[in-house]
Figure 1 (cartoon, helix red, strand yellow):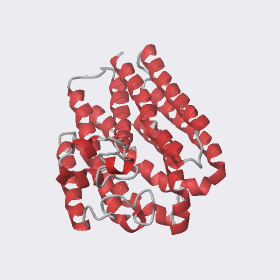
Figure 2: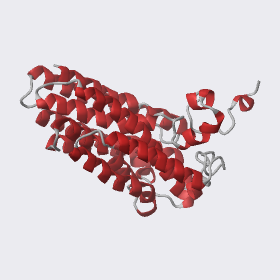
Figure 3: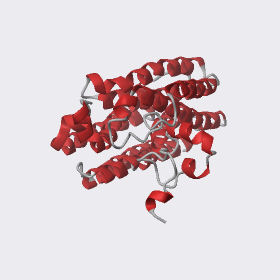
Length: 320
C-alpha cells in the first residue's frame, strides 16, 4: 500500500503521524480536534508546563510543600491548558485562514482545506472557552481575575505578525501566563518570583518559536508575514544563545527568590532543574539547521522535555 493511501483523510501536514485523532477519534469530531490541534500535542505541553512551574515553585515557597488541594490545581490546569490551547488555536486559524491557505505547511488545516466553516469554528471556540472558564471558576478570586485578563494576550497574538517583527513575544505573553495564574491559585496572591518565572518563560518561547518559525521563513517572506526567524536570519544561533542565557538567569532568579528561606536541598534541586533546562536548550542549539524544516520541527517538539526538566525538579523541591 502506498504512503498516500495510508494517510488518513483530512490529516494536517505537520501533525504527528499515527496520532490518536486520525486513528481513534470518531470521524465527525476529527475536523474540530484538528482545529484544536489535538493531533499536535506539543502546544498543549508548552502552555501547560509554565502552569506547573508556578504551582510547584509556589508550593515550595510556601514552606508546606504540596498539599492534597494542589492535586486539583495540577489536574485542572492540565485540562484547562488543553481547552485554552484548543480555543486559542481555533481563534488563530479563524484569523489566519487566508494566510494559512497560502503557506504549504498550513493549507491542509481544517478551515483553509474546507473541513470546517468559519461559523462552525466560532461555535467550537466558544464551547472550549466556556469549559475552560468553568475550571477557572474553581480557583481563588485573584487567579480568576488573572485568567480573564489573559484573554487580551490570546486575542492579540494572531495579529502580531502583521505589525511587528517580534510576534514570538506576544506568543510568550500568552503561553506563559499560567506561571502567574497557578502561582496565584496556589499561594493566594501574585509574587515577584512568579513574575520572574513568567519573564523566563517568555524568553524560552522566543527560543523555541524562532526555531519553529524557520519552517515557514520563505513562505512568510512571500506573503509579507513577519517573524523573528526572518528578522534574525543567519544570525539566529547568536540570538538563540542570548535567549538561552536570559532564560537561565530569569528562571534561576525566580527559584532563588522563591526558595531563599526553604531547605538548602530544595533550593539546590530547583537550581539543578534550571541548569538541566539550559543544557537541553544548548543541545538543541548544537543540532539546529535553520534550512532544514524537519530538524526545526523536531527540535521545536523537543521543548516539551526542556520544560518537563524544570517542572520535575521544581516538584521535587516542593516535596522536600
